[in-house]
Length: 311
Image 1: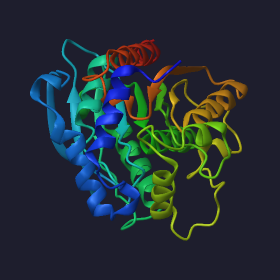
Image 2 (image 1 turned 60 degrees about the vertical axis):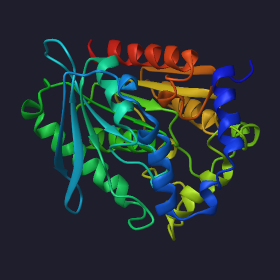
Image 3 (image 1 turned 180 degrees about the horizontal axis):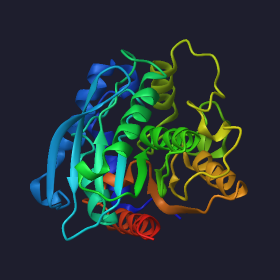
């Protein structure tokens, strides 16, 4: 089907603005532009309502990390979801993904801990992975104090979906139980060759040149593209991982690798719900204000994950 008309209009507006592409600038410029495009463009009525938010810190691999705790309305007990923001491991922070974390909190009826891991190129791979794993391990040991019960899950979008997948693998190896993983258009295979990377290389918000820019800053001199901490699709053993909801979009360069990971999880016996949302693009989770189709997809996928983690 064609691109959702509301999103197509948004893409036209962005193109006509004539802004330089992110891959032609510095990480600092990319971070500022992304913050303006997300948090800077929101009005209060666009924010998903939650019962409360709390800014705090959580331990990372090499020091404290900023984090934000979102608590849902109503009476618990609630599961807890550790959330990792997207942005190619180079841009993005708690504020760019504030509404997405709110949406996951409200839509899944869970306490959400959004973690602001260290970014590349200042802190290249595997710094983000090490922070994500350290933070998730700490949350697992402090669920009572954060307001949730003993059910723990992970979630993330794009690069954050990559981190969530890796965290699920590493916590499983530790014997830390998880009840689910919510992988929203995740990057899971750094050098894989997929039709969607060609079909959707330009014009759909996330472009191939931008992906190359992200990976260039994040991976640096790391030579092993199949390292499962970078490409979780290539983990040697996926058996026993927590059930997953894997979200993809039709016009997303990452579509095929996300679906390939879903199939690999299924082949390993992991209960997996892979949902492709036609007509939508990478980043649609934060486009509900301009696209009813995106809003419907967000509600649907959050509902699927809510059902999974509340069993």
